[in-house]
Amino acid sequence: PIGAGRYTLTETPQPGWIQSQTPAEFHVDYGVADAVFTGKDFGSWRPATISGRKFNDHGADGSGANDPGLAGWTIALDNGTTTTTTSTDGGFRFTDLMPGTYTIDERQQLRWRQTAPVTGSATVTVISGQDLTGVEFGNVCTGEVQVSIPDTVGVRLEEIEVPGRLTNEPP
Image (cartoon, rainbow, N blue to C red; front, top):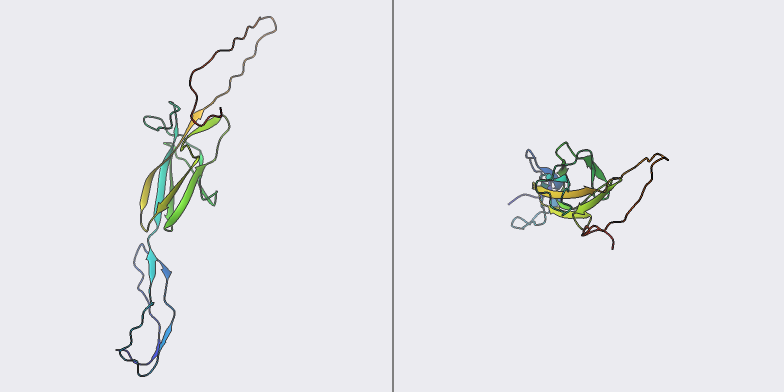
């Protein structure tokens, strides 16, 4: 039993943990020696990480298998509140995240079409201390061709049909 008086509960911080909740000071009256005091909880969490890869989708199939990474692309967390740039191997990483749900997307670049994920973004949930990996973004280069033809050269253009199309290409 504890005696009457004002009490403040404290928690000794542990390395790698962030305290998110502490109980308020409370008062114990005289004559309540055997009382139980509940709701005096502490909340603590460890930072989480989300990582993945941005790849050049050579097969235009949304699969990054054997496709090279793309450097210099901007990957955004939660509508751009936090961004990072992909490394030389296409890797990206968001660190020091609170547990919760996050939406990750990429900033599109001219002459590239996104192939993965098909929804355009990835929504993931991380828990305390989690290192979530495998978030992938794929793009295929649509390219551009410029041709300069001298006035003295005759040109004939023929339209050809190319079978197949990307799954996210408009009809």
